[in-house]
Length: 128
Image 1 (cartoon, one colour):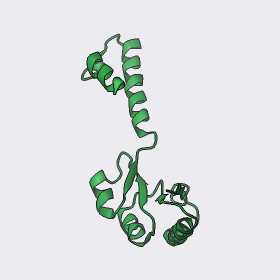
Image 2 (tube, helix red, strand yellow):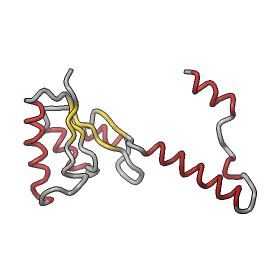
Image 3 (cartoon, rainbow, N blue to C red):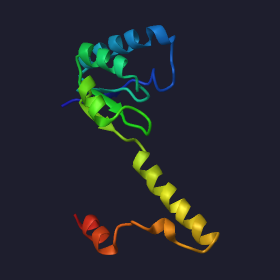
Image 4 (cartoon, one colour):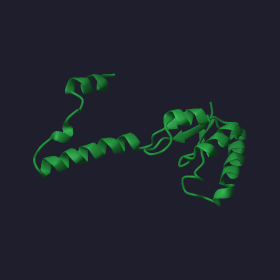
């Protein structure tokens, strides 16, 4: 199995928007010829563009899921074969930690911790 290729034209808005997809599709074909077994296109959140890319790509397409972006179901229906979260889960965890710390240091309460996993649940998760 070969490596996955990463195409960042959408993430960094490289090239004119009206030719970007064509360039990604051409590069995907080159990646496939070079032995890649998948293509990751971070920053591409437009379902119509993903539909076209998935239909025309010789490689399985990996997309990034982000808050406010297409749902997992929408990405799968577009033909996306792998979904990445990047640093999204870590960002969510650190946001919760910051809110709890700010509450503790501010009013001195801990209501931000309501609904947290019990230690026993967390312990089981970390053991597996």
